[in-house]
Image (tube, rainbow, N blue to C red; front, side, top):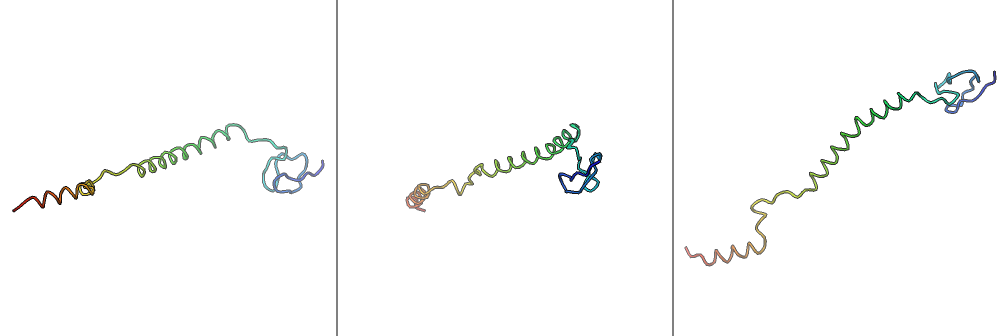
Length: 91
């Protein structure tokens, strides 16, 4: 029964202990069961996918050009034509 330091916190634990008494880390390096890893991945994806989709939609709506209003449709040549028409019109 030798004392071994914990890989995480450094506390000395018995070599027969399965977990560190200080931090709870497995002393033998045993991993958590696969079901916990899958549950964590599913949980992260449940929140990450809608967030990513929302950001993509936000970026797409901001990058689309807004339809021009009737005042914006008149370009410089349009103003010249209006000026020419108004000068030819005698009221």
